Amino acid sequence: MRAKALDRLIEQELLYQQGLKLGLDKDPKYRNLIAVLEARLNNLKRSEMARRVTSTRITAAVDVNQEDAARYYEQNKGMITEDLHLLILRFPAEEEAKSAHQKIVSGTDFQVLAQEVYSAVPKGRDIPWDPGFLHWDQIPFEWAEAVYALRDGEISGVLGTNRTGWCIVKLAARRKNPDAALAGMNASIANRLRDLRIAEAYERYMQDLKKSSRIVKYEERRNSS
Image (cartoon, rainbow, N blue to C red; front, side, top):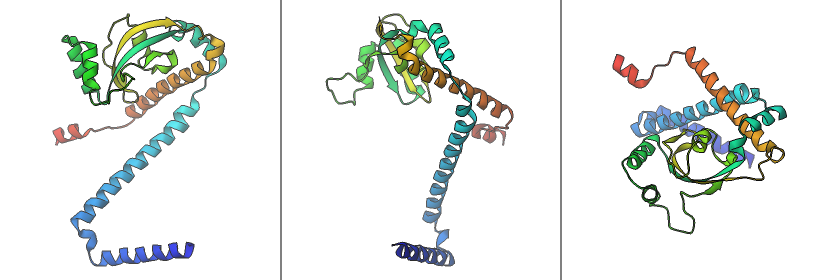
């Protein structure tokens, strides 16, 4: 099996070298294909290196202990011990979310807009924009404070990040969670606090990199030329 694989590799290399001699590498279709593959490889290299830097220089430096978790619980007890019934409209792009929110501002009913946003979803028993009551740790930390600040029936502005996606949220109801005592929430709190600290550390790290780098965006470069 290995011998056959080696023979096949040798044959491919011989054919490749013959193609170069014949000038087939000058063919526009071939060059376009290679350009696409090289772009994909560069994106993969960039993505993997970014992941490694994030893992070794940011994530690995973040630590959360029991005292941290207990302190965070006391500081955020109001949110942690309360579940929210949210109606959520999700959008793939921020501009789409902003456009939808403008419709709400202009008087479009949330329910009508929800049916419009999810019109392509097959009708079934589940309502795609109504996940029901959510625990504190099921709500992305990036917009948890904004959502918990809503009054019953109130609709948020556009919430989200590139990580979480973009959404508009309506608070339908809230209720106390009797099972949200510190003892039973330790792991969830530690995980949430760690995520928060990683996000903060990431922002600091990126700010430092940007300050020490010269960044020229394509539009700026084109306008200056």
